[in-house]
Length: 377
Image (cartoon, rainbow, N blue to C red; front, side, top):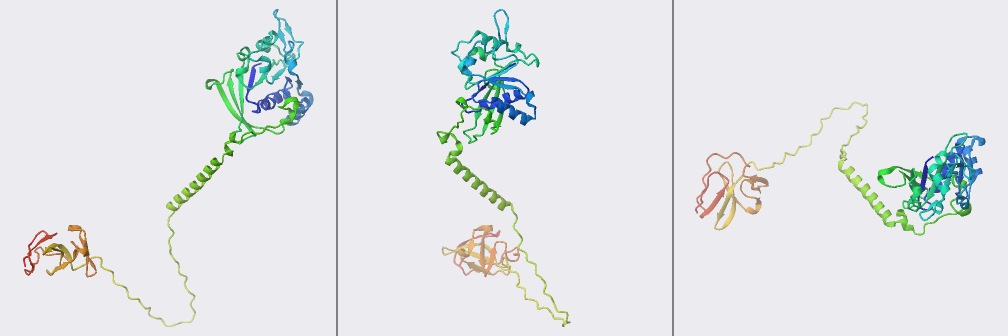
């Protein structure tokens, strides 16, 4: 009973959608279909539906092909006159499914609608099949909803828009979007579906004039985003970078393998041999980290020349070159007699510092010890 409109550009899947989803379903249910779709074959459709759905041919509906001139006739649709008398001696019979392609040609925005057609648009639900009781349905195919007459648009129940996925390089795929009413806005949007063309449907009809076989080609490959070489180069770089990054992360978190070797014992003879004392290799004494004798006690200047003052527990004093030491104060560290010397190396120093020899010239002494002295020659 409702009026449905299928919109979409040429070769976008309008006719295919109507044939595969509307006409084949109606034939399987035993309905009579009246359409002006070019190249549609009643015999092929009935044969396909019978084999596909395992239905006896006598239970199937029929397809009645009409010309554009037939659609323009006053007696094309059943209608009521001004006296409310029904006229059913028409091409379209009560209970039929009517599928009209290129509906703008008959009911466009600049067309003058016939009174009989207006009656069918508004009252087609009253024309029911005498046996099944099914009312008439009308399906219109048009490229743009804006080219359809306002009188017809206002009685549209649902409209569909088909879109072929050419830009994605998917020539065998199209989408179908459904809205309630004739508007195509987000508020009345019902849903969207993605469909693939089935090769067995194409022989049942033709989208080309006179049922001729034709094909379409892309005049500009740039409309396919996958024909862009820059896109493929970018994808290749992204894949290589992703693999490299994953490998680096794996190597970073992978624990290092222990380089342990397992020695295999050699087979020994069964003959008894005298016990031998194993030879023990001499062990190397541990290397001393810090000097156990000397410690850095401070710095001294003699006649303008700097020295590092190094002492031991017995009170011996040595003057070493500052080039052998690093840093100053408590963190000063150097090397004397092959050992490292710091302010805390050597053995514990007595509370009283040893006297400094008096045979030196006058200088200044800065030490890390609590007492400071002047050394006078």
